[in-house]
Length: 398
Image (spheres, rainbow, N blue to C red):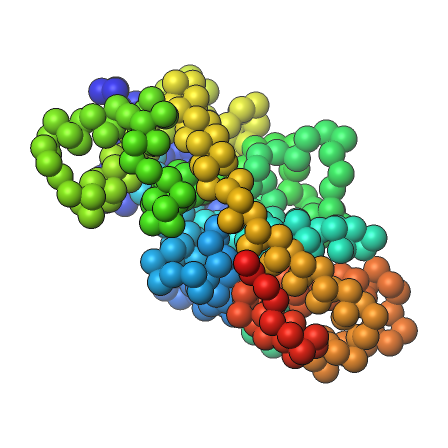
């Protein structure tokens, strides 16, 4: 793979015409005086980093429970890796790095404790009240649940950051069910739900794929669920391992695994830059609005590498995500979330005073949503402590 993006946007201060320009941002939901020294997107990034929800990510499971080992990824370390990759992609494509980083830093703020198992349990428990989706919950965090400013709830982020979070998985398809949170935001400031987001948002989304595929290999090897020989079942990984063996005969495992991950990230990122450069050249957008109406994502993998990336995900699914031991632990975690939701529903007095305030005569849907918000904000440790407090026992994680 020797091709390069069609333009060199690495010159200091260079900005491609298809980049989001902070000087022409569509603004915030609530008008604020501009910062004297920071662009709107820099300010957004800083607000996210200083938020309570961001700090809580350090105590939330990625795949393995946060207390199973010091070196397994948490939701926070995953987020930092996504932000680094997103920023690198944005720099190479002449985009606004601060916007790409801000979207990446905020994309998982709504994750509940215990990873996707906690999300599944919370979605089931909250189904009578609209269900639960961590992407939508990230929006609730940054638009309502953070309470840090005297003039507004949430973080009052720029339109472009909110747009990137709403469209983390691409445009909202026609006829799709739209959550009340998204509908309310778009009614106040049209989000163009059927359109594509900025290229910065597209970089953040694909950086998420690059990060979790590579770090889940690392964590799976560390946990003993994956083996180096087993990884050879994936042709792209076998090719990388063969290349390492040629370059570094007799390399020890402590250096082999980081080198494997480094080369895999390099393979994926270089392919994204080449393929995205080709798509951008074909679409020839003259502005960020041209990106929105391009009719397809302009940041992506080539067909060959997309197939390789799917093969990696399938291998991880078989050997890590569906491992019997992992499923046992995650089943116990789901039971914790389910039990907590049920207890708070039947006994609202068990909620902290600030969370039960105003709920006495509230509609049932509002009560259910308040409980879901409370549970979603918990770290793994806090959820377990609440379980012990309310049920006087420790859950069995096998």
